[in-house]
Amino acid sequence: MRESGFNEDNPFDAMVARFDVAAKKLKLDEGLYQVLVTPDREIGVAVPVQMDDGSLRVFKGYRVQHNLARGPAKGGLRYSPDVTLDEIRALAAWMTWKCAVVNIPFGGGKGGIVCDPARLSQGELERITRRYTASLIDVLGPERDVMAPDVNTDERVMAWVMDTYSMHVRHTVTGVVTGKPLDLGGSVGRHGATGRGCKIVTDRAISRFNMSRENTKVIIQGFGNVGSMAARDFYESGYSVVGISDVSSGLYNPSGIDVARLLEHCREAKTVAGFAGADPIDGKDLLEQRCDVLVPAATENQITSRNADLIKAKIVCEGANGPTTPMADQVLFDKKIFIIPDILANAGGVTVSYFEWVQDRMGYFWNARTVNERLEEIMTNGFDTVAAYADQHQVNMRIAAYMLAIDRVAFTTRERGIYA
Figure 1 (cartoon, rainbow, N blue to C red):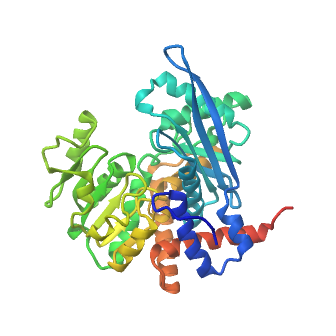
Figure 2 (spheres, rainbow, N blue to C red; figure 1 turned 180 degrees about the horizontal axis):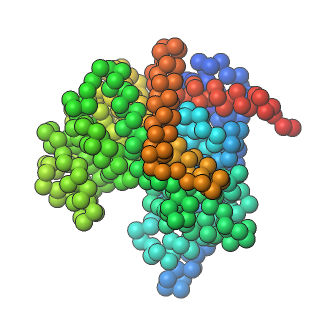
Figure 3 (cartoon, one colour; figure 1 turned 180 degrees about the vertical axis):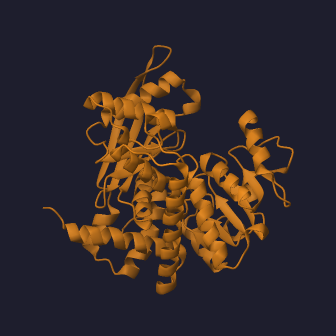
């Protein structure tokens, strides 16, 4: 349906490839196909900033709102020198499908600024954030587009976005972002929600295959917010975490890693390197070690046609967005590896972001028990619905998730009609 060359490493091409398969199985008509695959709005902004040394630099920023049929755009803001418009397009689309899979009333959005935060001071980062927010002020808001933290952004960055937006509209608007500090309208349970969601859907997967937590070995690639919180939850739930890597190094111990001790080590060292309770291993080699559950929780395109045949896991739970390419999907499927796709597996973060947005809008906040119980209910229902869809249509979990999501967004679009 989409006429263009396919690039395995292009995340938007990867999204469209899965979309195409699901759309054909749903017999989606061409007109509706074009509506759903095309981003509603793509914005590029110049972000001029005065640097600490007095010089003026211009950074490039993007915000893509993929689909608003089911509610306001929802999606993170990332800072990286590798940000591209195609990446932001893909991430915005994945957010549309992710929200639809777990049936929460958002569409997909994503933003990014091309910069290297490691080379910027806190003051420079704040000025970049505020100018970027001011440039997008007309398209942001609790009813329009709600930002959240992503790669190299955090609750402090969200506080700057919220404050800038609030100053422009002349009153405090906590619901314009999620992932904020608790004192500014954040939600308990948000920080670890994506990792916790990965553990919840893995629980459902091992139950499907009559596996026990105690006899299940887990390898986690990535030890940022998602990977570290997933490791903690897997470890505390009785799984054996045998491998962990971060951006610079990896650890492997077939007898299991003491994740509580590793977290303490990382608080001091800021890296997994040097931890005494496991052997060092290259991060790429770690992906290829034998395990029951592999959790790629780093970045896109980690499992490709070049290494998919070396993956020895029984289950792949995608903590990151787009870690597996479409060409790798087929290899894993042929090897009978069960994939819990990203638009389901890592939906815990946007689910608790939704909870935060709801709490901000009503001015009443829940305790941790309520947040976690509701997260478990939504993630469990999401997994069970996708698994039932997969069984009914005789497709793998990824295509089932896309079919379910597209079906829900298509239904809403048909019900609303096309305004012309």
